[in-house]
Image (cartoon, rainbow, N blue to C red; front, side, top):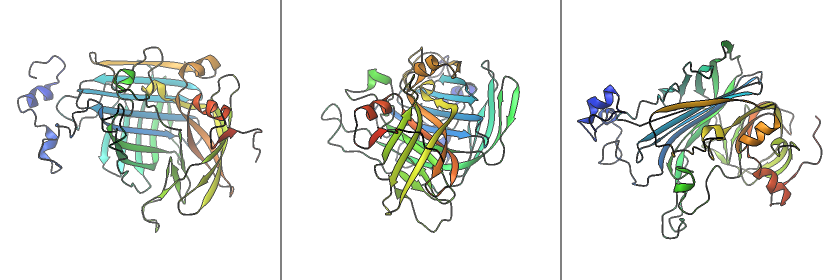
Length: 385
């Protein structure tokens, strides 16, 4: 590895000690191998973080995520800032190098301050005019997501199925966001959700590495909503730290009634009935706020607009790119729709109202309603509360 033009000074220093890395000096090993040696040779093995947050006034949405692909020696990250419909994304790519604890990729530079408690998400100044410095403090109990894998059901037949594990949580967010020199300080009540997942598959490498299966950009979409007494994260209910209810609860298959923008088929409003394995039920009414959406195609979910870069698919020199979109234009929304994080006013059937995220795959959600897929239907009239 020594002499590789893409290596940093630290990489050069550790290259002569390969396969050891700085993490091997910590008491963290789970196998006889060094940390840099993956548990699988699957090229689609990944480590990934993700976070979406908003300010208390609903003017700002931030989405960011990053992935390491150790068997491909590729690292990538994205940052999206939407301020009142001005949607700017920055993406950056590099080789992983020797130090897997270094999360900085181009101007995207998150720091794990305290594991399972606090992250600091930083986007340094860049040519696309956005920056932020956000502290995310966890408020809900993390519960390990056991790997979901049927070893006999891989694609193509005979291959072990893909596997994902990790954890998720909600939290309070403080700090600032800057757009073209205007600094917006997040007010009290700003919040978000984050996850840490790892495994194999999950769309890594795009169509060329899908191994005969469908290209994964999500499943049926999800909801990420935090009430004071419980939070819903996709298929789970999570509880605040110290809550007497142990672990988490499971969300059973919901029944959705959704309304869409007529010119784009992008989600606009929904009423969703939930059942939980505790026996409890809840109905949530989601109302999208303006064009406050983070379009994750700009984060490589399903291929970037224009460049069609998929997660784990870029194999060139170190690069940073980005774009700014005017989401008030319907043709722009059509061009970037896919796995979308819609900031909503969410009202529970007991009248409690909070800000939260409703995630759809657009226009797949619309098509599910057209086909009357089980559990999917159109919301015939907007709900007035």
